[in-house]
Amino acid sequence: MNDKIYKLKIAKLVEDIKEQLFMKKWKITVKFTNKQPSPGEHGYHLADIRADFTYSTAIITVYPALKKEHSNDWKTIEESILHEMIHCLTEELYFLARARYVTPPEVDAANERLVQHITRAIKWNYEPNKKTAKKA
Image (tube, rainbow, N blue to C red; front, side):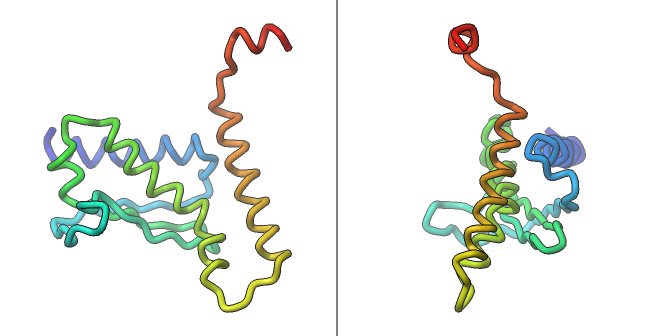
């Protein structure tokens, strides 16, 4: 797949995931780079994200290894981008966990917001098992 089509498909994927995860208010920019970071403990970095939950903005950096290693495996590309975007949802709790002092009510409130967000996303995309649905 040529670079232009690849970049357009990634951009469309980001928009689709934003809709599925109820993240329409987020402004997510996708940046493609030619520089591949050194391998980490889990191998090559495929992508990463810098998210700001306060302003609902994020920048996804897509590394060359994503296309090079997985150009014929769109499911892995989807999972990699989805993984990065879920960091937007968990960023507030991650921020609080790194703070020197956080009150229990702050953590509880952030946790409830995250749980409710995930609940809505799953409910929106959930298709009940037909056997179970008939019994209810």
